[in-house]
Amino acid sequence: YKTMRALIEDWRKQWGVGAFPFLFTQIANYKTGADSNWANLREQQLKTLGLVNTGMAVTIDIGNPDDIHPTNKAEVGHRLALWARALAYGEDVSYSGPLFRQATPEGSSIRVWFEHHGKGLVAKGGELTGWEVAGADEKFVPATAKIDGNTVVVTSDVVTEPRFARYGWASNPECNLFNGEGLPASPFTSE
Image (cartoon, rainbow, N blue to C red; front, side):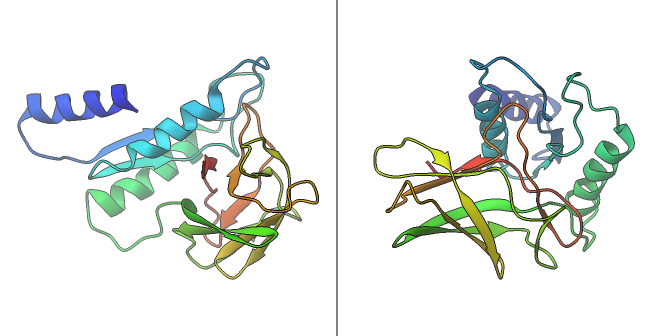
């Protein structure tokens, strides 16, 4: 995050035109070794959206697990164009999939809230996948998740008092949360 922030701030300073829109693509799904830190890299990229006038195309659903470069370049371009239309041109378009806002413990479950839920949250292809929860010990275990309005409620028989939730936390995760406009949710951790 610090490096990306420094790059954006430096380019804006050097070019002297203010906080121009800066768009980037989040790292796609890709099979790597067990010691890989790709999930954390995606989280750092997600945090970059905290800088004014930035946009991030999520590609967790269209990557090529055997090649770091997604072959579906048209969809990557389409998602970046949606951000450009909103940020640079002020168009009223749905430009992002669901982005983590907060997680609230509710007894034996945890409720996850999102920005950019659009026409509603959707589990593409069936039941939600890619969810984990952890208690105070911060040891994550696989969890069951269900859409409830514009939130997701996550539970696990192993963690009776969840404090943290995460989604798509792997190099090549199986995750399928989208908004009604067909844009994927970014992987995240509430930790």
